[in-house]
Length: 159
Image (cartoon, rainbow, N blue to C red; front, top):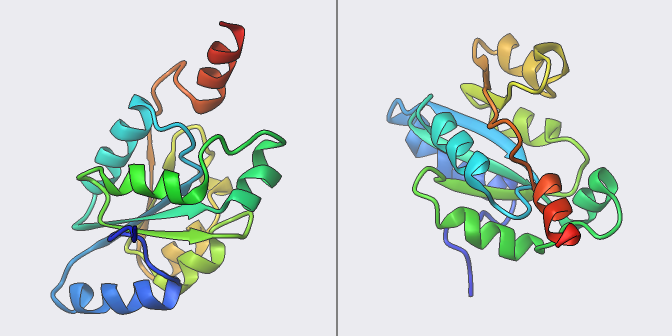
């Protein structure tokens, strides 16, 4: 079953965003693995969506998650993760990417606002320089302490 909010590729997504931009809408972009969605993810995405009119989520592919998180990850494959994210009201558009960072997506989509968790130092946010150079802004959102997919997996494995 196709996931309505999941773009086939970055070009298709850019085409979907063009009329929204023309209507003066502000595009917000964030990215992540979003493996085993938890309340921290839900709060984060709602806060990101509140920073503009349209929230685009870049979703790491399975291969990308494995490279970043190690063997045994992701728990859910990219289609399952996309389906769960698409069910959230805060998420307007999704696009999967295979790179280790979303830099190419950020450059191609040129968001007005780039969002990452406050656990990222501002100078380490990939794509931040490109967004700022275009006159956009970079926002950091507080994370929910003690809530992470890695912690959930640890708790599940420990019984």
